[in-house]
Image 1 (cartoon, rainbow, N blue to C red):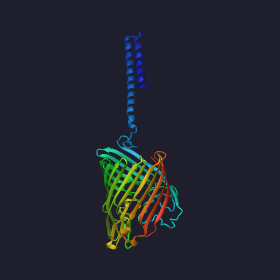
Image 2: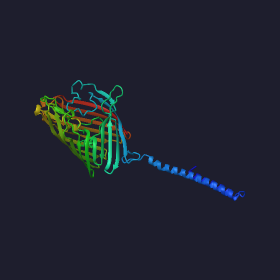
Image 3: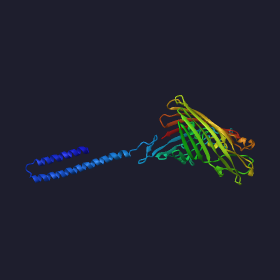
Image 4: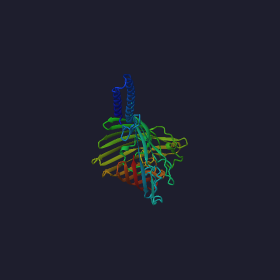
Length: 456
C-alpha cells in the first residue's frame, strides 16, 4: 500500500475509534477524555512515521537522477560523476592477414630508408623466394580522451597507443609491447605533448590498410608545442615548435671517418618549426604548409657539420557525385625533409675529409594522389599512388654514393572494403612497391593483405 493511502487509512481508523468511544454512554467523562488523549498521541505518532517515510522517498527521488550517467559534450562521451569533464574511450581491434608474394618484407612497405636493406634486389635469391604468410593483431589501438570547460577555454587530453612496440614472437603468445602514439593536452588554442607533426596533413591521406601507407604520406609523431588560430569561415592556421632529428645520411666513399647523425649521437642544436594554413568548405578542403630546421652530424674526431632544412607542401581534397566520390592530391618539395614522409631517402649528403667535411641537405620531392568511390552503402574502393625522390647525386658524385642508397621509392595501393554494419570493416588490399637505388639493382615487392577491423 502506498504511504499516502496508508496515512489516510490510519487517520480514518483512529477517528472512528475516537468517535465510538465518545459515543459510549457507560464511560465517565474523565475516562473518555483520557482515552481520547491516548488515541490522539497514537495518531500523532503514526502521522510522524508516515511523514518520515515520505521524506525518505523524496530523498531517493532526488538522488537517483544524479547517479545516472549523463551524456558528454562530445559524441560517444559521458560525464565523469560529480564533474563537468566528458570522457571518451575508443579504438579498434584489427587482424592483418599478410601474404608477401615474392619475399618477406616486414610489417610496413614504405619506410626502407636510405640503405634499402629491407627490400631484396631484383634477381637475388631473396627476391625469388616463394612468398611469406603471417597473421597478427599488432595494429589494434586504444585511446582515452577527455574534454573539460574552463575559464581559459576547453581543456582536452588524449592518450593513445597500439601494440607495435618491441617484443613478440611466433612461438608461444605472440605478445607485443604497448607503444605510445599520442599523449598531449590542449588548453584553448595551445597544445603540448606528442602527436602528429603540423607538417603532416592527416585530413588528406588515403584510406589504406597496409601499415605504413603510400610513399609520400606524412610520417612523424613527435613532441610538439603548437598554437591554432581560427579565422572563421572554415579557415585555420597552426604554428608549432617540434622535436628535431637527423636520421639518414648518405656518406661519400672518400669520408674515411664514420659519421653519426643526431639520432646516433650528434647534437640537435635548434628545434624544427612548422606552420600550416587550411581552408574547408562543403565539398572539400585545401592546405599549405612549411617546415624549417637544421641537420647536424659528428664524425667523432672533433669535426661537426650542419646545414639548414626547409620544405613546403600543398594538398587538395574534393568530394562530389553526391559525396560518393572523393579525390585527394598532395605534393611536397624541399631540402633535407625526407624524414617527414614515408619512403625516406637520405636527408643529408656528407663529403670531404677531416676538418674539410661538408654537409648538404638533400633535395627531396614527391607526394601522392588517390581516389575513393562508395559503390553502395556497404562497399567502397580505394586506389592510391605515392612517390618520394631523393636527389643525392646532386651533392655526391654518383660513383662515390654508398651502395644501395635510395634514389626513388614509389607505391601503389588498391583495396575493396566491405562494411556490413557500423564500426566493422573487412578489406582486401593489393600493394606493389618499387625502390630504385644508387649503385645497385632496384627492388620490387608485392603484397596481398586481408584486414578485419572492429571499432569501439
